[in-house]
Image 1 (spheres, rainbow, N blue to C red):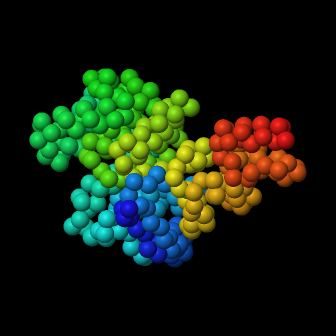
Image 2 (spheres, helix red, strand yellow):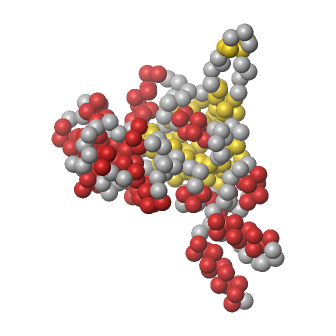
Image 3 (cartoon, rainbow, N blue to C red):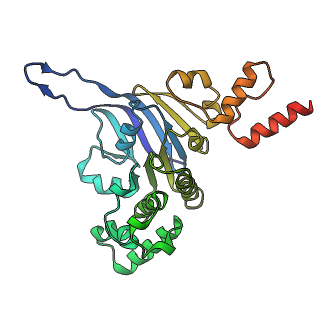
Length: 287
C-alpha cells in the first residue's frame, strides 16, 4: 500500500512580530525537521503534550499551514502548490476540536450538504452522498433535526459526516473528543474505527487520550517539535518512563503491568488492553 502523506524535513515557525522599541523577536521553531509517512488505509494516532507540535503537523496535512522548510506531499502533490489546493483538500479532510465551529446550517442534512453545494455537486448526487455520509456515522435518523438540539458527540459525528460527503481518502481529526463526555467520546471513536475498517479511509487522530491511541494501528509521539517514537501501540506504550518524562501517560492497564513488573512480578510489559491484563493476571495466579 502506497503513502497518502509524506513529510520530508518539515520545519515550521510562526512569522516574527516586531515589538515597539524592542527589535525583533527570536524565531521559535514549532516543528524541527519532521519526517513522517502515512500509508493509505492506516489508522495513526499522534500524541504529545501541549506545545509538542502535534496539531501543527496535522494542519500541514491539508495545507491549513505550509512548511517554512521542507515539504509535505499529499499523494505526490506538494502542499505549497497553490494551484492544487482544491485537489489536496478533496483528498484530505479535517475535523477540529469544537464541532460548533464546523456546523453552519440550521438542519443536519443541510449542514452535511453545505460543502457539496459550494462544489457544485448535482442535486441527485448530493442527496445520495448526504444520506450515505449520515448513515456512515449513525446519524441518518437525525437528518431533519436542528444541530443545536444534538449532544456534543452527535454534533461531532455530523461534522465528520460533512467531511465524509466530500469523499476524502484521508480524515485528520484534531482532538475531536476533547470537549465531549465519555459517552460522546465512545460514539465518535466507534465512528472513526468503522470509517477506517469498513470504508478504508485513512485516519490520522490527534489525541491526548491514551486509550484512544491504543486502538490505532500505529502511534507517533511528538515532543518539542520532533518525533520521539513511531511504532505499534504496544511497543510505544512499553516505554513508560520515557513517556512520563515528556509529560504523557500510558493506558491504565499498561501502567498497572509496569508497576507489578517493577515490584518483581513476571508480567508482560507490552499489555495495552484490559483483556490482556486479565489474561496475564489469571495465568500468574494459576502458576
